[in-house]
Length: 475
Ligand SMILES: [Zn+2]
Ligand SMILES: [Zn+2]
Image (tube, rainbow, N blue to C red; front, side):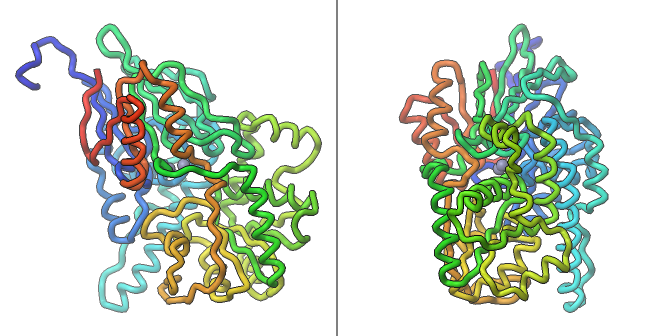
């Protein structure tokens, strides 16, 4: 205890920024007072393999000492290390929304499967060099076991936890089930209110409701993925999608869309089925080739509480918003392989979103060498991922350990982004001017975070740009 503090004072609430700090992936932060230690998010850090293992397998604290975990949404860079947290001794509750809990039911076991496949691949290479086998970060079974700890709660209903801590989920409008949790921690006679807008969506995203701002906030964690950039409007996204499909079909090519299985796939399917119904694109086959995306789409159907009015209207009119009938959803491996032998124009939407694993790798391998085809990028690509190398139009890229020439057209559309842009983030922060004591800028590549930090300071907002593992006392 510091010398300046009198005996009998309470120990202040402290936050520690453990992950997703000055980088996009691996979100994880701790909030602690004398009695309770909780973490917000427990995401996978994504990047080069060696660093991936090192960062994700070594927790900077003893997981057994954590009382509970608050989970903002199901994206793997926020939820993906929960199975490992439990494997390493965490026995507490994971508190999240109902839709996020359901999504984790598909996404975490899928992530476990990816880890197992990756470990097999690495082991094969190591064996050739006479090196011992490696173990996966966690297995599908570990992930399935972890699901038992996850609790789903409705939006806007406070959940009371040990130590009088309250958690309330407000809609973040980012992906299905996404939330801005408001965490209220008792502090002597008062309460400290911490909100976590990581990730934060934006208005008019298809399917979802617009983001909500919790009523009172003392401290705000704010994402900054696009802290230095502005998006074009989502209405333009549909127009541009039509153009890209049209021009690729004119060349006789295929449109390959690497897409996050969660949200982006459903949005693209939603727009493509509208464009087909409106006769605005040629009548070519559209495939969603990802067992995970197929399962996630089923979860969407179970959570109308997350839908906006337009989506409810579509459903009331008896139209399937995900285009069943016009869009073919593939889970079978053989059916997936058949697409390789068909040279006619088609759209293939497949995961993973950053092209790091999954069936998208086969489709890229088969199609990126042909200038007739288009790789349509509709999501964020983190540094050191195959997706980022495609965005940067490297002449040659490695897929399954082999180099391939990148000759296909690459189209990048940020208009689909489910993240708030620079203006949206500023507007959100300005609504809190006068009440918020500090805004912690996290979840962004360093240049983007810094740009947002400077922008907020220019507007007289109390922005703070933490370092990794920095501790900050709240009062
Ligand atoms: Zn997210
Ligand atoms: Zn994120």
